Image (tube, rainbow, N blue to C red; front, side):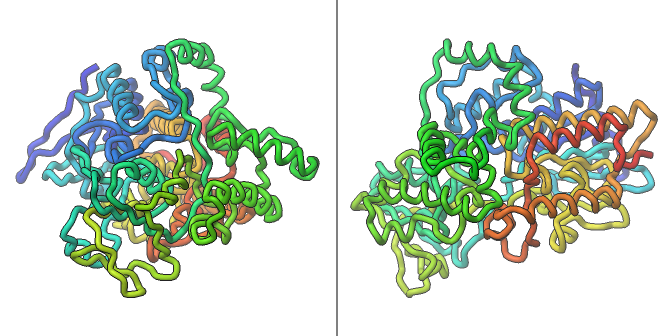
Length: 547
């Protein structure tokens, strides 16, 4: 099918007329474009990058790779598509994942309907017409009935993080905006700011080539060693035989993986039995230690402390019990799993190198970037040639807040979310008819899910909702205030029972000054969320007003 885009002349410019437009060409955006084309809609995708990939286009920093296994980080709508790609390893690196998403786009012939190198500047709802007027940074105006934002939950980098960044005489790069041509670290003095999942991948990857490296550590992270082995054709053929089993499985588990909490209750086990389970999952080398051992780590402080101690002991041994490094790199003020848990490969061993220094930013925070490097609160200037900003994102809400989105009565989404972050299941926001979202706050896809599982489920639900409306002669869909209120209340009730809300992290928006505090992800479980979405669809979408 070929999309026909209609251009209507106005007194000042041409306006692109669409039935639907999709923002973003990552995992969700590609699938959403495919689904709407299948419906026969006049649809176009818009992407800021020069190619497809979303996260896997922008995050091309050294060591970037996903931590969901290749066999489940997949599209599930086509068994043929699944079997047509051959991953080289269990956790493929960024270049391979970008190639995979290009493979998907080419197989489905999607690129002809995507406009690249185009950022969305504004989107204003026209109440009289029941349509959205969207503008781009290239000067284009789009008139569309449905607006589907697949902008990504981690796509708004905090790039202007420190005063004086423009004064630095060397190179400075944010991991989420990494240059395609790469960065030469060989023999250079390098600073890495941040030790979250991204920082860890960078640090362990560039350590062998730097002249020296200073890692600025504020919040230490619990880690799990990644076990990443190669996949042969025979391996992949076996996974292909399990396509339908895996497809069903990931929709039902707590976090959208193929593993789930299946151990007996913590209280029913002996100390040795608990340790055996933890050891088994530690050696398994995936996120299963976090998401498939004991759910009690999320809400029982005693269990959380025991599991945290298990991981601390593993980390301490790898640091050779060095008191300074252990104090700086091993968390003690929050529990395992209440932050995002990174997988790593000999990350801790980097700090045992003679040319690597861990700088304590708890006692001497970074004050500013100066021409020579980084000045900390103790007055010391750390002279470096390259600064890597692994300082994260305005997660969940940031991608949409950076667009001037205005709904009914001129309400501005950015302003609303500065006061309180609210959505209706992360699928719509009351007051913004015909605006649908994936990867938005208050859904598992905001951060606590194998992303391909949750993003595809949301795309399927959105497509079904639009189809239902049109088949019933309706032109607008909007979540009601009552439904949104009820979902926010339920979300908060579930979250309040966990230890996650007691921890400062980007999960809670704590990494962005002034951001309202609320758990960004729904933590009631992917399976439960999917079940509720399916019920709403089966009942004719109650809570979503159609007119």
